[in-house]
Image 1 (tube, rainbow, N blue to C red):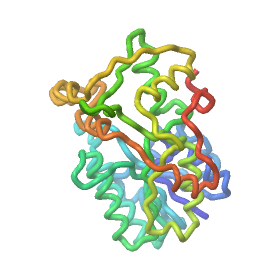
Image 2 (cartoon, rainbow, N blue to C red):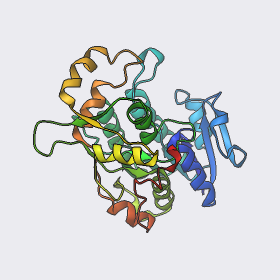
Image 3 (cartoon, rainbow, N blue to C red):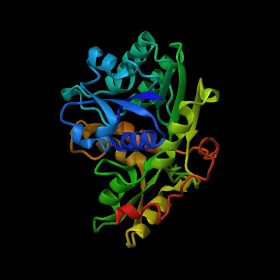
Length: 304
C-alpha cells in the first residue's frame, strides 16, 4: 500500500515509518526543509519538501497514495512563531482530509490523544474538533487516542526521558503531583510503548473493521505518578524521594508565567495532568494480538 505520512519526523513518526516499511508499505512523507536528517529511512521513501501551510505540498504528498496518516501534534503553543493548536491540530487536519478526498485517497488514520473533549483545554478541544471533522468528511477513518507514550526517543522529546531530566536526575526531591485533597488523589496514567502504538497503526491500516472507529490505547498497567517516578529511578540506578504537591498550588504561577517560553509547564498542561491519563489496554492488545509492553526497567533501559 502507498501511504502518505504527515508527521513522520517526530518521536512517534519515526517509529511509524519503520513499522510501515517493515510491513512492506511504500511511503510518501511531507518534510519541512531542514528536517530531512531526522528521517531514519529516507532512501526508502518519497520525500516531499514543504509544510502544512502549502496546499500544493499536501497534494504532492498524497497524490497516488492509498492511505493517509496524520500524526502531527504539539504540546505547547508558540503563537509568535505561528505554532498554534488551532492550526496544527485542527485546521491542518481539515486541509489534509480535504486534499485526500479530492485526490481519492479514501483511507485516513488520525493520531489524536486520550481525554480529548469539546469543553476541555485548547489542546483537547482542537484534537476533538479534528476528530469530528474527519469522521464527517466521507473517508474511511480510524482514530487513535493513546495515553502517554514512552520508548527510546531517538534524540526527540519523550515522556520518560523528560521526567528523568526534570525530576530524577537533579539532586532534589521529585514532585508527587496530587489532583486534590481526597484520599486517592494521586495522578494516574497508562504509559504505552511507542512500538505498540506503531503496531496498532500498521494493523488497522488495511482492516475494514476499524473504519469509523476510535481506539483508546493504554499500556497494561494504570500507574500512580509516584510509581512512574520510582520505575524511572530504578531503571537509571537511582533512589528518589518525592514531595506531595497539589496541582492547584501550581496553577497560579503557571497562569502568570506560562507565556514565557522557558517556563516548564503551562496552565493547560496542569489541567490535563490533574485529570490523569488512563486507558484500557484491551483495545490495543486486540489490535496487535499480544500483551502490550510494560513500563518497567527492561523497557526503560534506553534511559541509562
